[in-house]
Length: 252
Image (cartoon, one colour):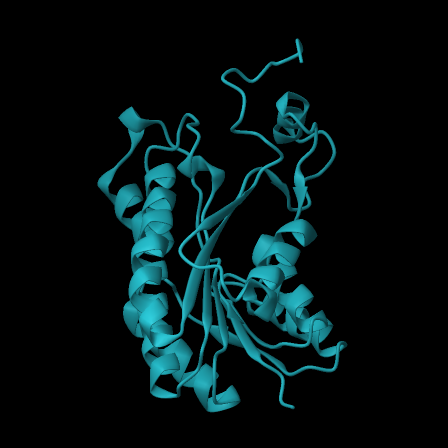
């Protein structure tokens, strides 16, 4: 039996990198999307290849729809199918509301929201053409449910992704395609000891950040036949970060 194929956007580093490597270990042939760091994407492919699967890097700026179309042309030419799409590519620049500019707004919205929308649309059309009962997994954020400062652009783009997941899943279910979202919270992507962001772990109910492997394993489960009845929903993986009314709950 041929391996299933997965396309992971923004897979050269961070969570996307681990998703690609973990899916390769799970037996998927993988396409590793990158925008700026081809060498990092090649390294992901090298590691993936150690699992005996096919892997290749594919360029696309996810804010440019023509790039996205070209990416799918390459992937379908190489693999003939995409069974699983993981829309992971995103930027999370922080800026105070009163300092935000139109350029910042347009760029972040284009990558984090428009890119997910049209990547999903193009993938779904090609799945339908080839009668593939595919799965589309959108990486959102726990900012869908929580509020942080300097996130008046980033947070709403992720809320849009979550709402889009529900609406599109309803339509795509008629075509045999599932769509779900994963919403990570703070995730350790290799920050150096002493990084000020690590201090936030002390204020979380579980007192630690997620690992990239934990996010990847959730994606693998949602892509699998074991999750065949799951669509139009979002799995939040944040160690309970959005549970407390206030960050400090030492009375518990």
